[in-house]
Length: 324
Image (cartoon, rainbow, N blue to C red; front, top):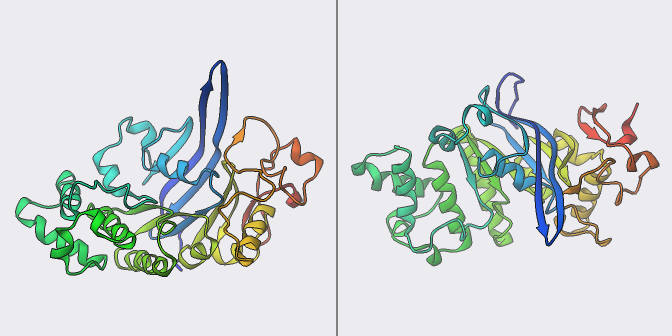
């Protein structure tokens, strides 16, 4: 795993809040998708965000990608608060921070060829002259293991397998020379047999190019394989943060323990719990969002939101069990 330096922060997320408002007739419902989310990503690091569907993982990534505006908070990129300095995201920021989406078919225009998708990214960001486009496209396809590149470039998305389409999405992200890639469940829609190939590709690109990743997943196994550190989210809250090995070997928060137990028993961690309680955001109010599902719940958990506390393992945990 990468050796991390405290003064080598690439991205800093500070106190992000996001509240979605929906209306049905005369009723207004406010759901807090993110509550005071803070973390950082170091140069060359893989930071995994894990949690069930609806925990706020993708909303966080979309805010970082500047596709969604937060209700409040700060987003620092290389020491500059880009939410304050760039009301409209600059082309430079978009080239440095790229996103790989969960569904590779939906992220590619079906009426255009693979070559067109890559050429468009290169032209838009000024990464290649007209006479260089074909060579650059072929080089990108070779980088992600799509051979022979000339044949693949002429194909349309529907002519490729799911794994091949995701490799095209990765190549398109690489085309603009990013420093941080936001990978939103990049293997969840792929066959199990090819998921490890995509993870190995991402890991190899990290080592070759010094890339940093924000890797979003509900699969603790892939987080253990790929990530240097892990952020665990539940209902829009960060509940545990720490180095991937120690955190996943000895999870401290009751929610992380349940996720680990589900993976160990062969269940899918991202599915709703048998109790029917979902982790989709949280209503505006006090108390721990996990109190309704926690096997160790105390009365104060229903009244007071615990702060993130550093425990003896070095992890940060949001739980009253570690108060003192």
